[in-house]
Image (cartoon, rainbow, N blue to C red; front, side, top):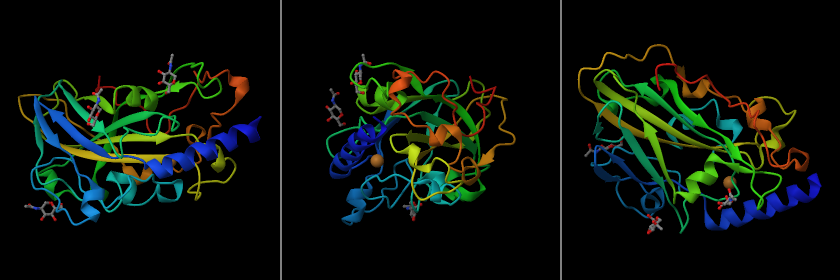
Length: 272
Ligand SMILES: *[C@@H]1O[C@H](CO)[C@@H](O)[C@H](O)[C@H]1NC(C)=O
Ligand SMILES: *[C@@H]1O[C@H](CO)[C@@H](O)[C@H](O)[C@H]1NC(C)=O
Ligand SMILES: *[C@@H]1O[C@H](CO)[C@@H](O)[C@H](O)[C@H]1NC(C)=O
Ligand SMILES: [Cu+2]
């Protein structure tokens, strides 16, 4: 059964290679719509625009980062990232919405896994931020949601919800967050081949896939909630955590993974 399931996964990951993976197409903040950055167009020579808060990356094809990059600069805000030139004004307590899209689909539906959001203070203009200096707190996380008769072993995960919402995902900016510029690190984690890293230790070449994307925002107002502590993104994961090595093709699970252990730090208690 496992062999058969893995074979199906192999087929579906081949299919998604053809279709491509994904990256952000648009973001919305305070009622404003911003085009995000299309690294495929970038590879054809389109210049990175000065008017998007969505970070630059050279990640043509919207490809995943594998565990062997989880301790590198790329895991912060995508492959060869650099900051957006602007930070989107947003009110504390309101929602930043992002939308994934590439090659006619939001994200491959067979890339089951969590959607996780982080925030870091830029301590100045985010356009000048060094990704390696950013210290992130986790805003929220959503993982396994329910069983699904179409996928009796894998079930229905947050990434499926994202696909069913045509690639959009809401990210709540904490109430009362102190005025300033922040980087929101939005991440999809695909677990369809996570089992490949079982027993291989940290930073293995194969296993779970991370798709980070960053958006710079500027909070105004009189909030007093300050971000302290936090973790550098290159220290969030090693790739050998239970939540990064889980076999989600286990038919004995009945497609239910209620005890899924999210990788990375706990959610910031003041985020909600
Ligand atoms: C926009 O950002 C990119 C990458 O961070 C930078 O190289 C470029 O100089 C910036 N452009 C403008 C107009 O500020
Ligand atoms: C089952 O999964 C598919 C693919 O993710 C999804 O489109 C569908 O809505 C799911 N059905 C239920 C009942 O969750
Ligand atoms: C889904 O998103 C694509 C890309 O932005 C858009 O062209 C399409 O109209 C959307 N579909 C629906 C049903 O909203
Ligand atoms: Cu993939």
